[in-house]
Image 1 (cartoon, rainbow, N blue to C red):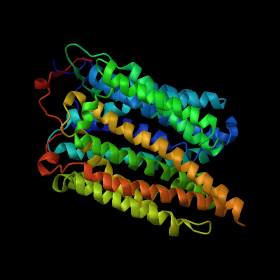
Image 2: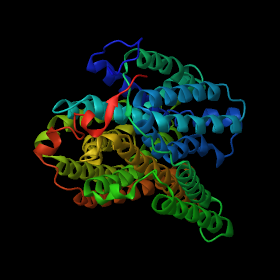
Image 3: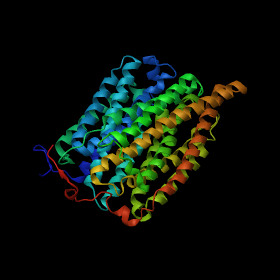
Image 4: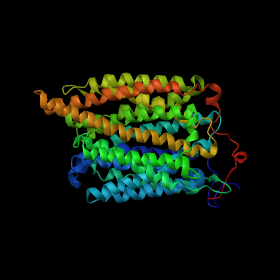
Length: 493
């Protein structure tokens, strides 16, 4: 088979790369694009103070929970088919969410967006690692990493512009024309590649238990700002989440004929080490955009547009870091970049934790924020490479899904935990000190950044788990270019 649909055209590699990168950018963008718009959303749709965070969490949790299923689906049913399915669901949910009339409507739409993104994101990395080989793979991964990393910062910028100039609804509507164009390009240019022969069954039970378990875990943590850790409610929810996660592990080991996550993957130091580092990195970095957005608007008095534009230097720093990392990866190997990235991030968070109510953007945010963003860009490429190094091509989507899950789970749990830390510190300052609200809020955000610094310091230590992937490992594709000998052949769409 020639791998092309009858209506498809032969496309240059840069077109295939663009199709993958645009989708990944959209998926990451929608984690952060709502941050600046949250006050407007809360007022119009009457979210409660604690309920508003679910505009973010509904997306992140379904995204994290279904990423494993999405990665497996891309391997089994084909990268093109899953790309189109994920993008169609993502765009449709964006359109529905943009017309939301109440909080339940928007929260449900955001959850559906997360499911669409969970199928779409693994397909993008699968497209890259099955299209590019040799020295071209690190460069392609660098471009993918740059747009993935920049999506978080650009989301804040774009969210501020759209909210200030149009309406918060446009932070969702903006996905529709971009997604429609991506679907059209994929239909025309993206060839199919999927497993041939007997297809294993999807582990739906595993997907449901892990998604529900993670969602309840985050829900319990988030609820501790109202219900103490030792309350019956919190302990009950935590117990149920632990039972569900234990059931997930049991299903993977004993029940599923084709488990969602073959635990044998983690026998590889490269896979296990990269996922540990990514979990910790996600917990720290995901929270930075959230707290900086709140700090600039609630303490420094920035409007939505000004707060969004304040993230421009950080977006540029991520792109610079990702490009630098991808260019020198073949010379340095993975571990040195992990050490540099986590060390710079730790120093950046320590610096950022010095913020005060009387600080300014240029003295307290610009420098450390840019340093942390640069570190994030540096880390993406080596982590993506380590997570797929030595992995069979037919499981590339699964490996990428596991890595993305680690980032999203780390981000959602980290945000829930750090938000609790910040709230507790703010409450403590208000209760025991003669301070104003601005000072208390700044102290709370500062404490959260201190914890983030500790997390990236642990990630630095965790990088020792990743083996020395030297020059020969990083210059050769992470998956063999000869797909036919692995039993995978291009298939008509």
